Amino acid sequence: MSYRLSHLLLLSAGALALAACSEPQATPAPQAEVRPVRAQAVSYGETAQRFALAGTVEARIESPLAFRTAGKIVARQVNVGDTVTPGTVLARLDDEDHRLQLRTTRAQLDSARADLAKAKADFERYERLRSSQVFTQATYDQRRAAAEMARARAEQMAGQLRMMENQLAYTTLAADARGVVTQVKAEVGQVVQSGQAIVQVARLDELEVAVAVPEHRLADLKNATTLSVSLWSEGGEQSHAVKLRELAPGADPATRTYVARFTLVEPPAGARLGMSATLSVERQAGERVAALPLSALFQQGATPAVWVVDAPSGKLTLTPVTVARYAADAVLVSGGVPDGALIVTAGVHKLDAGQRVRLLGQAKG
Image 1 (cartoon, helix red, strand yellow):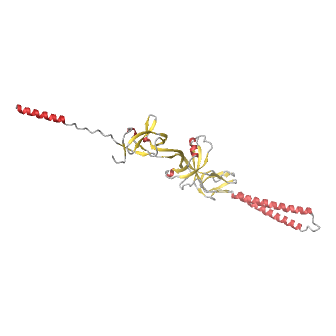
Image 2 (cartoon, rainbow, N blue to C red):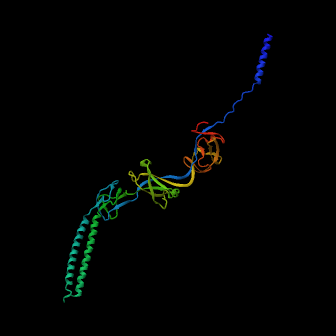
Image 3 (cartoon, helix red, strand yellow):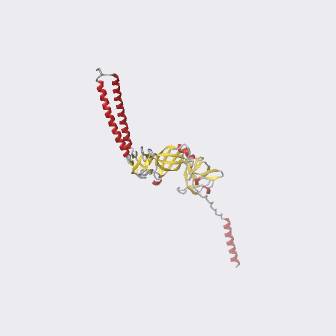
């Protein structure tokens, strides 16, 4: 028994000695984490400022039409909304009195012409007696004056007849251009005066868009490089070129805006008076900026910055940038990072300086 116990103790001591003599196994150091990130290249360029204003389609010329003589309306042949063309009869007056005056004037002209023929014949006949003893200068002058008076009266009656013919023609009111009736201001049976408005017609040969411009947009409007209009009825999908025709010199006292009128260069076929439209104004800002996502901006104190990625090594550098202005979905920077530099566009507040990253879409190294 004592021999076996001694043997076991010797074996245990030898194992412990061997374990003590063997070298300890090294533990591998943890590797730094390589974070995947999204990035985009910085691209500088001249930007354009854009804004939009609401407007209404209107006719450039909308005129009240009236008779050029007085009388009683016996017919009105158009209603609001009717389309008219040059020569379309709009209304008529009772023309009986004008026809009577015309017949009377024509008769007076016939009488004047007869008197002229007689006076002219008497003068010519007496003129042939110039070499005879019965010829007197006083009688010659009288007959010549009578012939001149008869000629003047005939010309006067001819002019009066033309005036009566015009007065008869004025009893018919006709359109002088293509347009649409927007108002009716008189009815059948009404006695109207010369120049009193009967109907109002908006001409369709030139359409424009009226826009109320706020005072802070006046300078941008005058310096605009591109002007276009889209109609709400078209879903705003089509743009139509316009040019500024008129800008009010003073503000409207109620709205404090300036009315501007833009002529449609090529009016769309579906344009109708009173339709709603959107005026798009674009002007070059004259500065070179780069548009970056708002999510790329890292605010460190009062200085905005972005994470710049060194593509070969994958290391990050926090670089301050100069912000020109903020847009609805982007920040416009005018300096701080070079053109073409890669910047991180998301998760910027979870990154550290010197950290290695991998651009999404690249193979793992």
